[in-house]
Image (cartoon, rainbow, N blue to C red; front, top):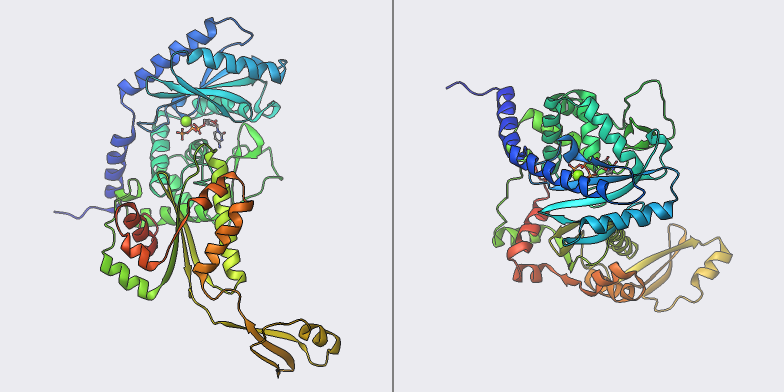
Amino acid sequence: MKKKTNLQKRKEIYNKVLKKITPSKKDLEEEKEIFKEIKEKIENAKGSHSHVEWCGSSARGTHLKGDRDLDLFVMFDEKMKTKELESEGLRIGKMVFRGHKWEKAYSQHPYIRGVIKGFEVEIVPSYIVKDASKRKSAVDRTPFHNKYLLKKLTKKQKQDVRLLKQFLKGINAYGADLKNRSLPGYGVELLILKFGNFEKTLKSISKWGEETKIKFNSKKTTTTLEGTLIIVDPVDHNRNVASAVSEEQYQRIIFASNEFLRNPKIKFFFRKEKKPLKKTEVKKLFKQKEVILIKSSFPKKELEDIVWGQIRRLVKKITNHLNKNDFEVTNEKIYSEGNDLYFFFELSSTNIQKSKKLIGPKVIDEENTKKFLSNKKNIISGPRIEDSRIVLEVPRKYTNAIKLIKDFIKENKKIERKAVKSILKKSKILEEEDILDNYKGELKVVLSDYLRGKEIFE
Ligand code: CTP
Ligand code: MG
């Protein structure tokens, strides 16, 4: 049998993936049905609204199978006062969900979202404006995205959008939320539009440099946008669609594109569950590394996006605190699995020297030498001269990183904001021995991933 070429392998993979991620005809009909029902209900209701527009990926056939989101926009005259738009939007939303589960949510304006027949439906109030740059709020752009893409994307390209969405999901780089810090769906659609198809997009990405800027209209230039990756919104030139993409995610997308093109595998799209490490393997690695784990749980009843920002800041704060106290942090990583949160810290050493050398001013600098020596307590050794400077050895405040983290948690529980407070209160510190004692279930999976330290597609 002849060996498959790289191109054949890729084609086979695309077909397999597409079979799994394309919604069925029945799925699509069901969506349309529900849309029609809601649209009629709203448009027949009394009120100052105009009409309903179906937006988001399901409206243009670029959503993934199983994604049951309906973003419905209720349109209002732009002369209407914001207050009235908001109250009317809420009133209509509540009317739509009578008898169903719903909640109030917030973007630029408060709106209602709920569940109807298994679909997550959002009822968003929006202004009718001439073009997106005349928007009165950020959501006013969305209907323009929809019109733009419906006009430009071909049927084939819609399938390529789905492929690219799934590829980015597979490598953990999809979504503009603060957890994922990557491309939103709309950005993926624009990439396919720009480069033509999935393959061409990956090939272009694989050649991206330090920074990349993508524009759709050469006449209009935008100078104010900044970022590693800039995708100028074709309907609003003042907006970077890729503004959420972090440096790390940008590099991840490039690396994964290169790796996939070199050696195509389906695992780029659907991650292969890796077998957790055996306990003996973990023990061996713990002899080569020093790992501390803080386990906690994700705060409930808080906006996920806000919590993610706070989590990242908390972990940075702990790392800085360790560094400031002379513990060298060589790696840190956050995992969230369901309700559980895991913060890993790796140090060059958990225990450090009990005494600390203080290097003072030059001896000939009499004034500062005097200041340096006054009110120094608990001197272990010195003063003496080293390289023309005055030197003292004093006890270190912390010689053990666990103790330092424990104190940090105790202190910060008092001052931190609600979400962080709850994370700290529920936190448990696990040293290597504790980790080994509890080496089962989810911890096994998370720890193995951490210790392997590989990209998910590797
Ligand atoms: N939108 C946007 N920028 C974002 C998020 C959303 O402009 N960061 C707008 C886009 O017009 C998008 C719509 O809001 O099409 C709906 O958002 P969302 O459901 O998050 O994305 P989808 O495009 O529907 O993609 P997905 O398939 O991931 O749902
Ligand atoms: Mg959507």
